[in-house]
Image 1 (cartoon, rainbow, N blue to C red):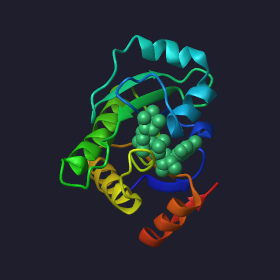
Image 2: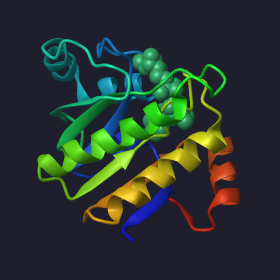
Image 3: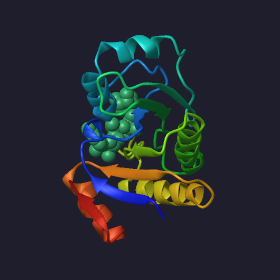
Image 4: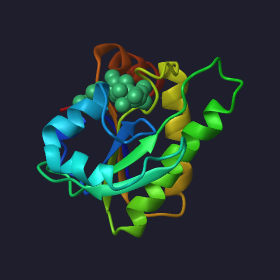
Length: 169
Ligand code: AR6
């Protein structure tokens, strides 16, 4: 199956689309969102202003501007409230809707950060398990290369406990 977990900075990845873990305003923030906006340049924020925000679990696409990636797919993960408030369904919806948008736009490769696993407080191991389940399910009947990107040392070590084959670039 064309799926890899890799340790990398997503803003450097030469794929057709990278996914941004945004907030509902789509007007930037910290974490991976801030890094993507810094690397893409101000044109990205200008296009985001035209989108009218995004609901939790949904996704919207823009160009990648100064990034090596052609597109940025912005999705809004759920804020963790203990796990009994539909968090897993919403997180899965983020991955599914982003993958669907990528396919609709002719992408053959896409890289995801660990949506909701930073500022939004989703426990890292559960966020990764939900990501892997949704991505591998989608790949049963779609053909594209999917990277799940872990960034910090802890999530890297965690991912190595859960999955044997994690690559470091
Ligand atoms: N490359 C790959 N992964 C990264 C990078 C990077 N350059 N930088 C951070 N991560 P977060 P969330 C990882 O907080 O939890 C923003 O302010 C990070 O280690 O970026 O969905 C938005 O505007 C973590 O594992 O996103 C929202 O307000 C993962 O990316 C809010 O944060 C996600 O962490 C969204 O929170």
